[in-house]
Length: 375
Image (cartoon, rainbow, N blue to C red):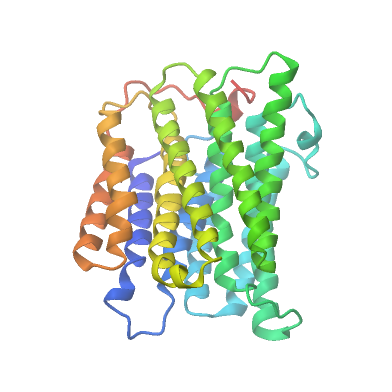
């Protein structure tokens, strides 16, 4: 990937984080800055990188470039509540994603039901399918909430569905992880990997349904199951990947994911205790959202953008430690205090520059899709 395109992603991702703090400076303005905070990272940057990874090219294709431009338009239209234009853009975006998915895989995801199909390809196709479905479903929610009002569920809010754009990034990171694992040779290993795939995908869908229905106990149950599944994937990953630099980054990402699972469970449990919920829920939710977006998801996207360049000439552990300090401490505190907001934004921009521009030791193209899938 060219340095110009990397610079664009650094700008978009840094701006995304900065929008998460703007309410402190423009609280008098009736605009939902969190939407741009979510869109610029998840949909514009993340969605484009998902397409880039899937196509396995050294540059953005015409379709991926169109996705980036139209997703930026979509983000602006949704931000300014120009919903007819946002719906139009989302349907075009879904069409672009589906055209790439069908070309690289198939119209119907037969691989999902083939136990022998590489798990990395399953997660990759699931990421694309989730992205296109999320775009269509969000449009349906806009039509319902703004025009038809056929369904009136308190949790059926646009921002709730917009958060779902982070799930494709989680799935593509899982795809990267399984792509560098040693192939499963025993039938029990194949079964466990497939079970993890279905648990992650169905678990998140079921969890989202329980959020809409406001069923707290089932939410705790499903989240605990997902936590166990993530722990299992981490165990498999650590025991089936050689000592690669990208293993270090992805392991840190998985620890971010476990951390967000724990904070998510704690947040749900707090809802059982209204007094404590009012006092502690906001900070806990910010810790959860920042670590999910800029911790776990960034770990996978960074590995994808530098896939051809590993190993990179930097001290991985120091960089990862800085990543944790910025995302788990400075960013949540920055939501409440301007000084921490500036420190978090500046530190995050520097972190991205080091991740994306530090020189690599080799230039071999190792995209798993261009080499037949699961390595």
